Amino acid sequence: MNHWLLKTEPGTYSYADLVRDGGTFWNGIRNYQARNNLQAMRVGDLALIYHSVEPREVVGVARVTREAYPDPTVDDPRWVAVDIVPVGELREPVSLATIKSTPALAAMVLIRHTRLSVVPVTAAEFREVLRLGRGEHLA
Image (tube, rainbow, N blue to C red; front, side, top):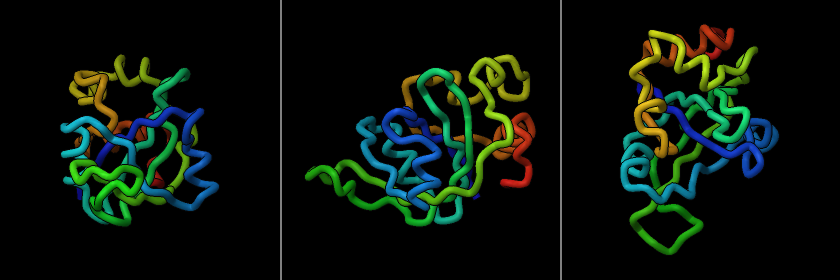
């Protein structure tokens, strides 16, 4: 299983919206590297959901339920979407400041490539974020 981090602006689509909807298609990615990351996702992979606008923080976990398919919101075959469902909310959100100050997370792609909206996360990084957010039960 692979692990990911998906960025979203909570005013546009928050983790609470994902929970309310029971799942969604993750679309709107218009960066080739982020698109390639979407294409690499497999059913069952877990993703941290990161609110990218203040406060910047990881708030929950989602599971991929459908692998990459053409983004239904555009008529351009270069762009794809995946389907996700909520797994659960972290008991305590994990802020970007906490991530940056945690040695075990110093190499996270989130920190090194700040503009990417879909990034891989190592299994160790995933577990550490869950630990920090008191969300070990979500693994």
